[in-house]
Length: 50
Image (cartoon, rainbow, N blue to C red):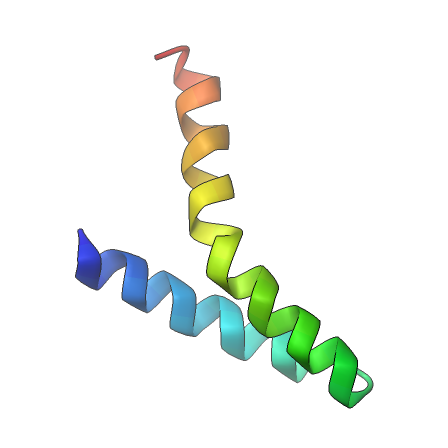
């Protein structure tokens, strides 16, 4: 599972940093990338009603 989380983090970091318009938006994008996989799993489990 660590590898999947790592790939999701790298993909999210690249996405958020590429779409940032300033340095601080890039930093915020990096922080968002740290928690994005957890939010995704929460939403999936919520959808599945587990």
